[in-house]
Length: 442
Image 1 (cartoon, rainbow, N blue to C red):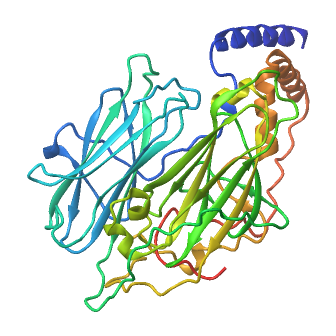
Image 2: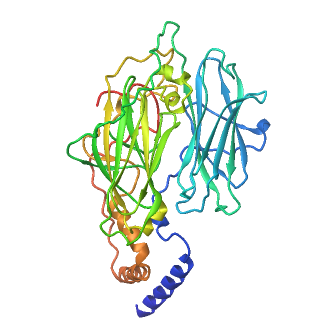
Image 3: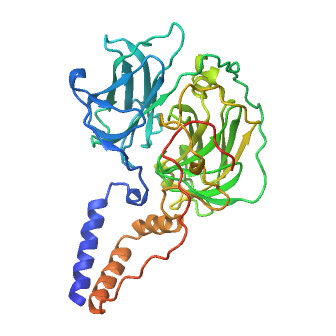
């Protein structure tokens, strides 16, 4: 046993030495794991693999990569092709790093484009958005044909050259019926919204859109590690809008003089993963708050020039992503408490009248998908207590590894016993991967 402890101590020393100069807390940060069918983007449009409407796909991007994916579009449905790159937490990135998306027609016309780059705060986090082919009078790229999604990775020479996993999603929206009369567009927002009050309930944000925690009007508490992004989804019906206050708590154990510009962040996305808005605040161990809100959801918003209004074009799950800059670990070696004060406002109005089944198109919300969030809103993130232990343990280094060595030696001397079976019973509610359509009643 003593020999095992000596070996374990040596391993601990080597392990810690190998970690010098790296982000020690990074392994404790839950990371978005891309879902869907594995695809390989092609180097030319001729070899582009076709994506199917309603499908989710995954690929990787190396520095300097440009990849092409094919999509077959009809002349009636609007199409949304999203892509998100997921660098490792703590990876070095600079302003201008990111991905460029272009949806192109067979004759090379740029139908739409979107650029998703990191800000100058140097924080690696999931970045992305969508390109869209919107059916509209006198619009570009209205004909039925084979189109191409082009994705290019941009990275500075000083940035981390590691591969970026990428998740792609192709969503199709049916046309309206001939007699549909959508309401006019609206960009109205509240000048000074008032936070909701009440008793907070626990939430556990997910690592991505796919496992985002479903929350409704009320107050929700969670914890976010430095370097982590957590996702929450909110059902917003036609005519409604969402207001979210993200209150980041103070840190009683904050390091003296600790400070991180753009230390906390809030991003908002629509049901097709289109980016709506974002905001940041510096963090120095004192409480700060960020407010995010959508405009009322109306079909005609899509024809407006402002991106925030244009993207609020259909009912369904809207997403809020809460991020804490990895540099906040220089302020506090612990998760930051965040309180989400959510208010979904306005009376729901009828659907504009689709000429097709939006659920089958991969963009409707079924009745079972909107599980009630009356208890804990559970996403895909790991338990906050275990995340705290892991985060702190990485700072403990040798003590943790020595303790593990003792446990391993002792375990070898104990007789084997049958592993306990997991308790039977109802499982936590799970939401949909993503989608559109009028949410059902809670």
